[in-house]
Length: 221
Image (cartoon, rainbow, N blue to C red; front, side, top):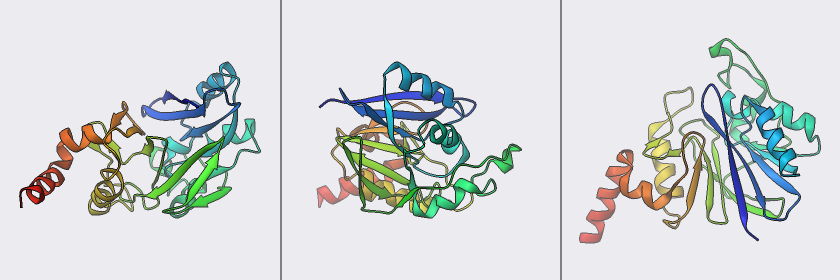
């Protein structure tokens, strides 16, 4: 089956929500529903899709703001998030919404996941990879030649690491060991901005130049 991925951009943070499904299937995954959930619901209605699960890459407000609307519309769809970010769903200080003057919370997680777990919803099998640094419990979902990557690796950039619980060292270690080790043609769907590939970022991302130099040096020995 062909995998279909549709991006919905929510303002004011230009956050990417993804609706992912197998061509011909009746259910989809909704990844990181943002601040304009009505756009997600419109797409689901237009494509005649149900929701098998709602996946959060991490617990920052712009990536969880639409969870409540998704659960209201599809109450049987489990809400899934990395175990170390689960507390952020129901705490406006932890999810940073309080800092922007508009405290918000999400329903609690139905399932928490950790590094190395495999999940399957809507006939789509994904591996969970824990990559902290942007948030303590940030995870990415890897499978079928794609990465649903949240705020880890962007086209020409990397995620912020100056939020509470952030770590530049952890973020870079995760990118190097858990993303750059994937096949270069793997498509990365990030939490902001356009899609990219592992190979493109390994070659051209200025934040990863030290990694490229180390690899090149090793090859020359």
